[in-house]
Image 1 (cartoon, rainbow, N blue to C red):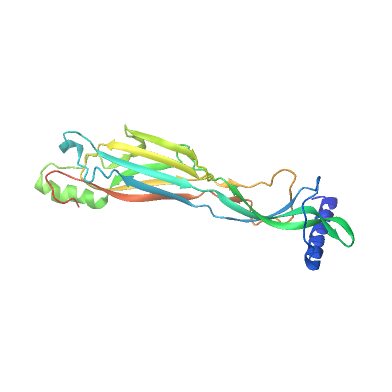
Image 2: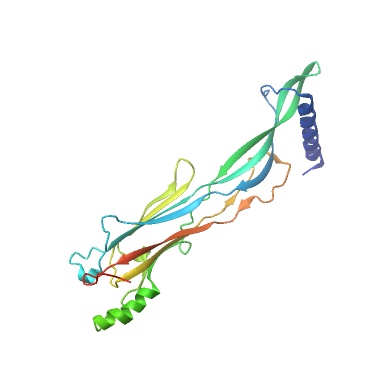
Length: 248
């Protein structure tokens, strides 16, 4: 910051203290007033969450080998990332009547700016998977194999994004500047019975706040950015056999 600009800032702060101390009421800004001076403070954390759900009409999905319709399971995930809130003080130069005449003085005002933090959908930055639990794998190798000799694990791990009916239903900003992503993997043809751990993980891009052109930062904030947020959800899905009353 140049010496001239620094002197202007010091003078603005000093005048603010004087005006507040004498109790002068600010009036409407005059035309051609100086640009506001901003002191940006620490941002508030934006909310990021993900929710996995299953098709309620298919309460008990069956392994496709025993299902004549080979219907499979329907799995959905909704992820939302809301903007970071940067709170700051801005100084506006306004005209007030003081000491028998009109003068231009600075007035402090608190304000908040929302900076979007979208979900990063680039390859490798998010995942949507299902994995047969270790307990179910042991059950297939042990108890199920004893009841049905030859029973074995066929396809325990699934990248749901590579299934035939996966698609991104929605991705973009809502009216409140939150970024929303909706995905679905329908008719997933599970072949191994048991309990699956369904996982979805996401990461945001992070935010970088920059004052609008013409504004002067007089108090450097602790940081002018927020790092990417990592978030997700985990749910358990049971896939059944027609001749087994209990899947472990």
